[in-house]
Length: 218
Image 1 (tube, one colour):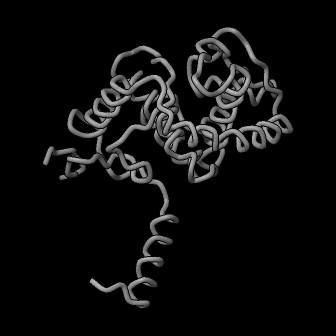
Image 2 (tube, rainbow, N blue to C red):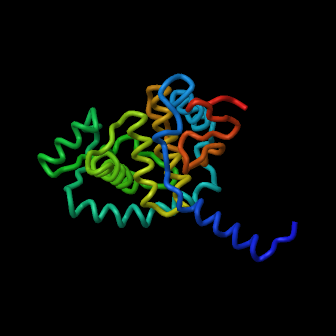
């Protein structure tokens, strides 16, 4: 088919619309074994099967670095960030209440081994994620530490980062939380790309259809 100027303008317009579409996890699937549970299982399987390090993923992770430095400075102007060698909060609500009362946000530095980020940068990433997602997101109500809360936090966080960095954020947030949801354990941090998942419409999986908000294999 000949690519006319009119057709080219149409393609460019569609790409711009696609690039600006909002991330959405609210209505894609419903709770249950064939809804979000199935999604978590598929993401978890992909994360566990992925290599610890993929060179092709490095650029996406490195694209996060300038954003992390900038946002960490902004967060420090609002709360005091204190790095600790233990997990300081059992729930997101507990974290929000303590931070509101004390003005101090404690961030765990344990389990910080990462193929690209050093320990300091990884801790900054955690601080940004916790503050922007679990404290500040959704009209300052914040989100919870559960699967739905983490997916909502991913959506909130992803709207603020460079587009190139979104695949890395999906691995870091959605990949890890889905693996924890399924296995009950914190997975090894990886620099990899999880293929077959829509990073912008969370819940959409390649090879599956969504029928009545449930995943059905094609």
